[in-house]
Amino acid sequence: MTYTRSIYSALMLLAFGMLSIQTATAQCADFSAYPGGKDEAETKHVLYRDLVGQGQLDKAYEMWADLYKHSPGGNEYHFVDGIKITKHRIEKAATPDEKAAIYKELMSIHDQYVECYGTKKLKSLGGKAQKGQLMARKASDMYDAFTRLGVQVDVNTMYAAYKAAVTEQGDDSGYYVFGPYAYSAVTAFSSDAIDKGEAREVYNTLLAIADNNIANPKDDATLKYYQDAKATVQSTFKPVEAYIFDCDYFYPQYKQMYDSNPNDRETYREVYSKLVGYGCDKNDPMLAEIKGKDAAYIAQGKAEAAAANAANAPTANKASEAYKAGNYSEAVKLYKVAIGETDDNMKKSKYAYAAAQIAYGKLKQYSTARSLANEAAKYRSGWGEPYLLIGRMYASSGRACGPGTGWDSQIVIFPALDMWAKAKRVDPSVAGEANKLIGKYSGYLPSKSDAFMKKKKKGDSIRIGCWIQTTSTVRTK
Image 1: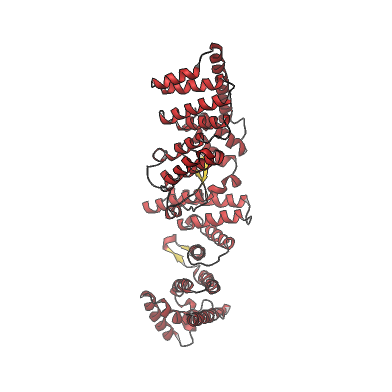
Image 2: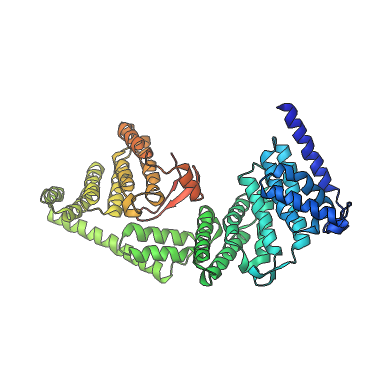
């Protein structure tokens, strides 16, 4: 085995030498430059291409390398096949050093392909030159080598290649470059190789290209490809959006969130907090409306509590009676009032938790129930039951937040696991129940392949939408 690998390594180095001895003047030479003459070159071209067509890439390699060395411009397939053969050799290479050396050859072939055939005009591009398309293929092979072939590719170099290709192609950029270009841009930004202005420019450029192709699709399939590509860009930038974008970017999505549920206090308080944090003006009409609405809510709560205290009514008892009578909405309302009637935090916690259980279990008012559970935990430090309840709310939301099966319904388990972990952390007495829930629902997590299809992997940050509206961490089976 060692002997065979040594021979293979020597052949790889020899091949690299064959490619590197080309002179600048011979880079696009045609068949007439072949030492054995044009007829011999054309015959050899047909023979090696037959082998490629049969999938015998190793046998085709020697003839192809000879033609590529002397007559690279004899036929465009010298580049097309050369890329295919060279990627095959990378796959077979035994060591990282061998892969790196052959990868260098692959990049050289791509560069020469652009030089020799970049000005060729294609009907599929409306008569435009294929230079940008060839540049995009080079970038795509960088990404393929990085993700599939085991080559240590510099992501910043890959980013530069995608940027050059998209700049060259503009609206003709293929949908297949969107995901890798977005990934390389986010990675470059995360490593401080580019600033937020450049990262934002990549995002805006890709969305503009996608929107143009969505508005003017060649066919239904192309329309779907660009729609999916646009969604991929948006999800890829999601983890870093808070560091790149400002108020103008976030405002539409939070306005939509507010408009969909304008009277839910937890929703509108989050909208206000987030947009102010992103630099939005507090005097903006929507934000001013929210501020006034919250002030009215607080005033109303105080007034209700004062009225209840003045009447000296045993409101908690009334709440219990309302629940027994099946008047669940009234029970929740009375428990809220009871919270304001007492200065005893243990009682406040008890009433808030009872109200949370009713809002969730009987009324399916998830946001209200979660708010009450959090209030219960606030009044009683070190109590894990409210967090267990919130976790159950999240875990039971698969059908409410998605189709009931698949990724969109499974990701609600992520924040549920967060809550159960928090419950046993703050309150060891509930660890048994928390572990039981964690064990049960871990079996419903998405698979690694499901996460991969969503451009996610275990440990990634993910935003959970629907009523949950929180950030969690991807888990997989």
